[in-house]
Image (cartoon, helix red, strand yellow):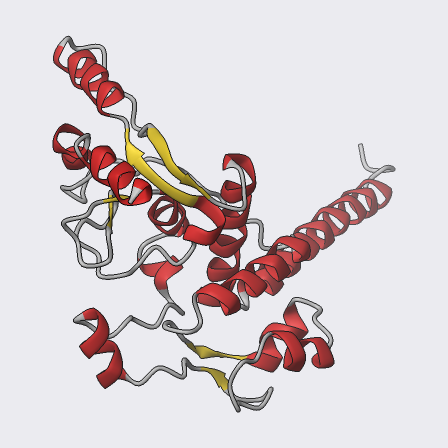
Length: 254
C-alpha cells in the first residue's frame, strides 16, 4: 500500500515535466560516445543485454560465435552464460518470444535491436534507458521521456529502481527558458524506489549496454578503425623514408 501511494504521489509531478522531450525532435538529455575497443565494457554490456533484454529483443543480424570471437569470450562461457535458448553458437541471436505472443502482451512486437545504434544513435539508446519514470496511467506503470507512450516495461528497474520527474526543477527550467537564459537539457528525477545500483553504477551499466549495441550494429567497425591507424602509421613511415631517399638522391645537385 505504501509503495503504491508513493508512486501515485510521485506521478503528480508529471504534468509540467513530461512534455520536455515529448516532441521527440529536441536535444537528447544525455550524450554517449561508444568505446568499441573496450572489451571489458562490451563483455559487461553483452551480459546485461542477454539477461535483461534478449527475452524480448533479438539481434538477428549477429551470430553468437561472431560476438564471442570479437569480444574474446570463451565458447564454454558463451554457451553456459549467454545463450538461454536451444540455439547453437553458430546461429543468429534471435529472441525466443513469438511475435503473436508479444503483440498480445505488449500491443506490438518488440523490434529487433541489431541496427538501432545506427538508425537512432548511441545517445538515443543511452538517454532512453535513463529516462523511464513512474506513470500509473500507463499499462506498465512507467513512461519514457525520449519515447513517450512506449509499450516497453522498465526491465532495468531491478538495477535502477523507480524514479519520478522533479516538478520543482521543471518549473525552474521553464522559467529560465522564458527569461532567455536557456533551460537545462538534463532532467531531474526523484527516487521513488531504490534499485540494486546507485546512480553512478546504473549509468555505467547503461553505458555498457549502449556500447554493446553500438558494436552489434556494425561489428566490423572495430577492425576498420584498427586497420585505419595501421594504414596511417604506414603512410607516415613511408613518407619519411621517401623524403630521406629524395634528399639522398638530390644532395649533390645544386
